[in-house]
Image (tube, rainbow, N blue to C red; front, top):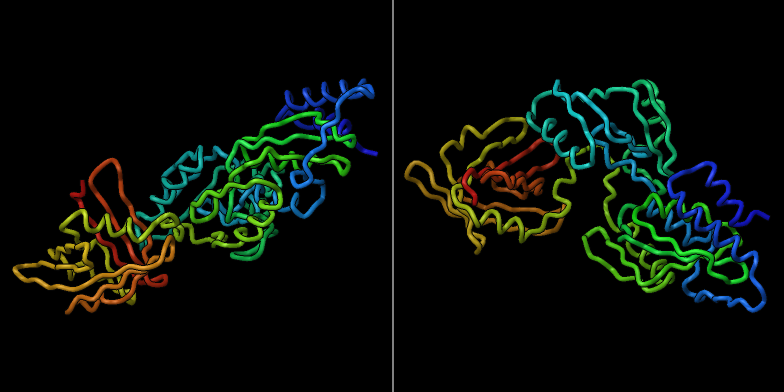
Length: 373
């Protein structure tokens, strides 16, 4: 029967990600082979043990899978990511992407103009990483397209759970069939925990060192005290958000936005102006040159232009990517409707702030302020 010793030997041959851990496991196993009947066995708590091929083990792996949708701004495929660093040419601008934060720079280039045809040309060869962290080199766009064809399409069910994440580090103890602790390992990322769960043998028992913490989609941290609570939390929150498995790369720019944040930004500065306004495929911002908007904490708004003044209201509701704002200003029919908050762009390097709204894919409203401190 395959046991933990054989798995460790195989991993020593096939992987080098944690050689010192596996060497430690080998040492523990050697020591346990010489135990006498006077040695002490440690019984793992029943509610704190995890078995191979259990439903919860599968759920943990789904939480720790590689999320293929995080780099859809580079290439539209939900079942794999492109290993960084890569070099790509975006609308004629060459960009080296070395970490996830660089995707924002790529998005800024794509968002620079609304009426251009965006192109992203990837420099090959690249390496792609699948949901189980297996890797393969891709040498051409045709090969990349072949692998992408095997992915699920936009917003279709996939195995990875993206609505909650583990907060690391997490430590786990490995028990053998005699209920002896043979090793305690600490994990600092999804990849290590995924591989660990994947290597559990059917004769092994695993105990986490509780409490551990998870973070759910709205940013709330939850303390978990045993495997039963972890199982319940994954059931309760694992499907409790939009996993953003679509190809609209800029539809999640307000994931962490709140109405109070929007209200604070708009009311902290005076003299907002309309930088962009499009309704029914018609650009209207030039009609509002010289119009300044002042938003107040009592949800009133005053518009001033060429000696004229108009007073109205603005109200917000919702949260995250579902915040809506309703304007009601007499005489401003181009603006008076309910808009979805699209993005709050607050550049820390200067005093420029942009707040953009949209309705569907066509109508857009953007307020800008160049003097927010």
